[in-house]
Amino acid sequence: MRRADRRRRRSHLAARRRRDRPQSLACFTRDLDVLPFPTRHLCRNELYVRPDTGAPQTTLVTNRGCPHRCTYCLASQVAGLANRYRSVENVLAEIRECVERYRITSFLFRSDLFTQDAAWVRRLCAAILDAGLQISWACNARVDTVDAETLAWMKRAGCWIASFGSRVVTKRRSTASRRTRPSPMPTAPSSSVVRPASSRASIY
Image (cartoon, rainbow, N blue to C red; front, side):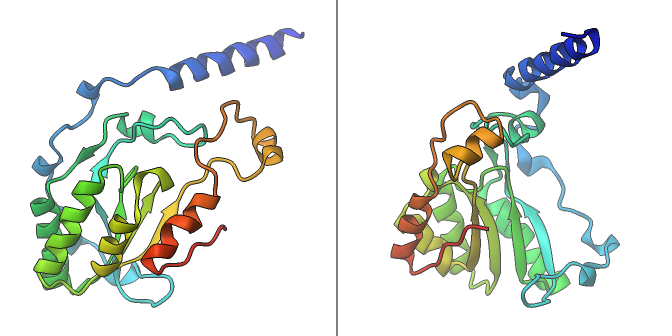
């Protein structure tokens, strides 16, 4: 092996070790409620729209961190392995501000894993419904963190699309992408989970 190849291999192995090293929670903000809402009055909010309707849309961070270490995702390094949620009351207050002050009713709930805590998700959905907020929103999820009841709550509260991350579709794809760990999440459960909630699933 040539010297340059050996250097590249050592650099690659060192990067893998850094990636697999657990991040200390002390590096991250634990209480997300202390963070101020984004200063949306400084933005031209009309430039940010929902792609299918053209309606104004904004991003709202609900939680940070993900306990999973998917080989294609940097979330555990960027935000840590501990999933920290904002309080339901805090999230609801930001939604109200967007609706009442900026006339925004479409949201992307930005998180590293929105559905990690199904009980929290159901509480948020109940709060949105109790407040009478007519909003629509999108989120991300894993098939092993949702059930039909949670999905039904999400749909009633305005969720119109959920993005599920599937690590491996086929064995050939796994080999091609050099993922060395077996997939805990086949794609088939995505469809079986969403059907009871009268929703559709697609792979794209």
